[in-house]
Length: 93
Image 1 (cartoon, rainbow, N blue to C red):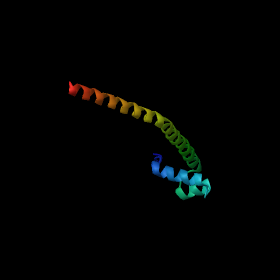
Image 2 (image 1 turned 135 degrees about the vertical axis):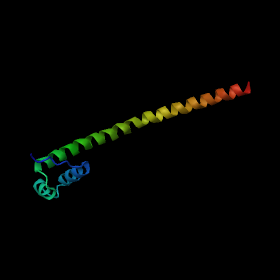
Image 3 (image 1 turned 120 degrees about the horizontal axis):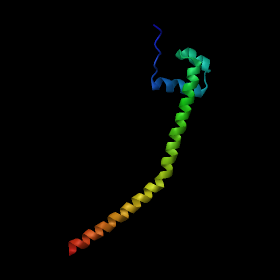
């Protein structure tokens, strides 16, 4: 039977990809150090960068949505005040 494919953890992949992005060592040096094929390191690096874009896009969209949340909170505060006035009115009756 043939060799089984090695399965790497996400933490290991991220560590290798980050080392490749830093550029302190060449991909060939990293491949030797981590005993991984250079093509695999390039793939992980690409996936890491694409994932980072998604994370930053999520942060940007969350930042853009924050004024809406503030407006919603203000609307809810107005509604609470209105309901409290109604309750006060009904208690006095």
